[in-house]
Every structure is written in C-alpha cells, then in structure tokens.
Image (cartoon, rainbow, N blue to C red; front, side):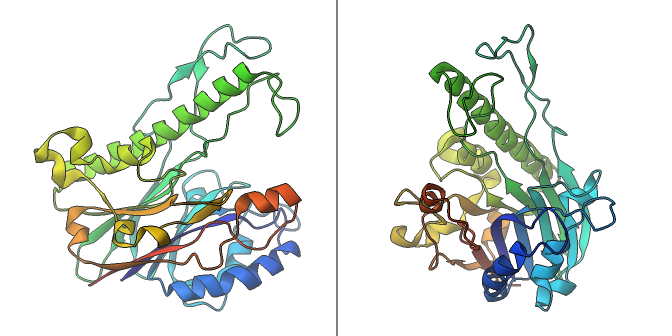
Length: 323
C-alpha cells in the first residue's frame, strides 16, 4: 500500500475551465501519476463556481486526475462534510479502498480560545474567539485485510502574522511592529490549537484501540523540532512517561538521509514541512518512504520576481507499507 500527501498549492481557478489551470495540470499530473498511490491526501484544492451559478465544486481537481488511476478512487473532501466546497484550501482524500466514514474536525474537540487584540485600531473592548482557519479531514479507510486505517489529512496554519484591524499598510507591510507581533502570536495560537485538536482525536482512537492503525499526513507548516509537530507526535521524550510511548507517532522521513529530507526550499533553506506520521502498529507494516523533491524551486524566488509558476513549491511524500 502506498500512502501519499501532496500540497497542490492553491490549485484551481475561480471558475470552471479557467485557462490558467491547464498549465498547472500539465506539470502536476505527471507528479501525481509517479506517486502510484493507493491513498492520496491533497491540500490546497480550490473550489470553482460552475458557469450558470450554483455551489462551488472541485472541477479543476476532476480535470487534474482525469485519465489517472486515482480518478476512479473513492473520494471525500472537507467541503463534502460542510456547506460545500470552499473557495480555497479544501482537503481531499482519494482512496483505492472504501472510505467507511469521514468527518471534518473544526473545534469539535477543542473550544476556540479567546483573545483581546490590544493593537487593533480601535482596540477590542472584549476578548473574542480565535477560530482555526480551516478544518482537518479525518477518514476511516477499510483495508483489504479487514482492519481500518484511521487517516488524518492535515493543513496547519502557516507561521504568517494574522490580520490585525488597522495594523497593516498593505498586504505585505505592517504599520507597527507591535501589531505584527500580536498578529504573529495569534497565528501561532491557531496553528498550535489545530495540533492539539489533532492529538485529542488521535488519543480518542487509542482509547478505543491501543493497536490502532493511524496516519496523520499533510502540510504541518512545521519541521520535526517545532512545537506543532511535537504536539502531534507526543514523543516519550516530551511526555516523560514510557507507558505512553505506544501512543506516540513516528515521522517516516526519519528513514531518509538528512541531505534529502526536505519538502520545501525557503530562501535557500531546505525545510521538511510535509509529513507522514504513523502509529506503532502501522510502523510494523512500514516499508520505506519517498520524497519527490527533485524539481523543487525556492518559493521566495517566485515571490520576489512576481513570476507565477505552474509548479507546487511543496514536494509530495509517499510512504510504502506491506499489506
């Protein structure tokens, strides 16, 4: 079994049939074909408004996978479990094996914290809720051997300052450093909160079955030493309790040499932001990992030049398991 995650990076235009999408399909389709995945987790899939009106649909994704093996897979998206596809950042799972159940996790297990924005113009009079930007997608996959794979498709908040009313001069420039600092802290709260809700969902599965097959995959916007990933992993070195070691998750990229262990290039720095984290029971079936980063370009170069590229600045990751 091959389990893959791929951040398609804002894939899909505003309208069905957007001509800009065709160039992206030409680049991304061979990458997806190369994955040869039995289960695919996509992040940043945009929804399109059909001509003539109506709810947004994932038409661009349909065009992307057309003709590929995964086009006939079982499918669930975060939009299927809410009011419909969002304009941006939908999560999608495609599976060769049946999807027994699915749900979107968005403050289902963790109430939003509250925050009073002191640097806002005018300052908040009272504290308000800090909501996660997007849900996580949980799916139960029925494997051929009769067991279930508990799968989480994850896209955590990026470490970019959240908006503060009156705090910015433009989309990329802040008016005050203290407003930027408060926005940056708010972004961290959102990202950490998502990670905590993920860990709560994982522990709930372990409460029911301590031998569960669990995989949390996607764009965590954090490397292995940063707090969000440490929360998701819950390693023994952090909990300090060997009795909880069976509830920790293992990042499969640890089996890749350090010089090849990256999914993003940021200002010349290779970063491992996209992960496949697996439970001990699933680790027993683990047979290797591939990081398809050969064609990556630096994401800041495109930003600095204003050049639009059809590529994703995230590399896909594929974990292999024996069945």
